Image (cartoon, rainbow, N blue to C red; front, side, top):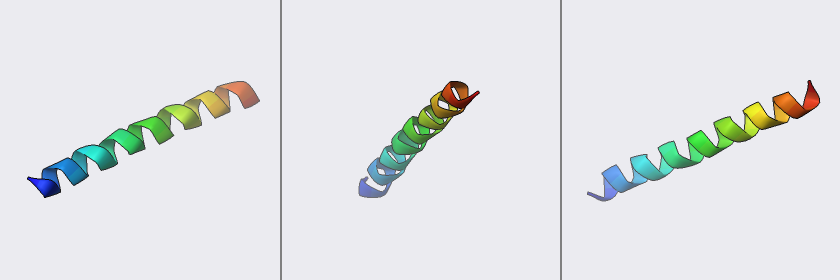
Length: 29
């Protein structure tokens, strides 16, 4: 169960990083 929690946490932070990257690109452009 701990492995699943780790994967969910990883996906959560990856999603935040992806959204942050899109926002940064939008601000730059």
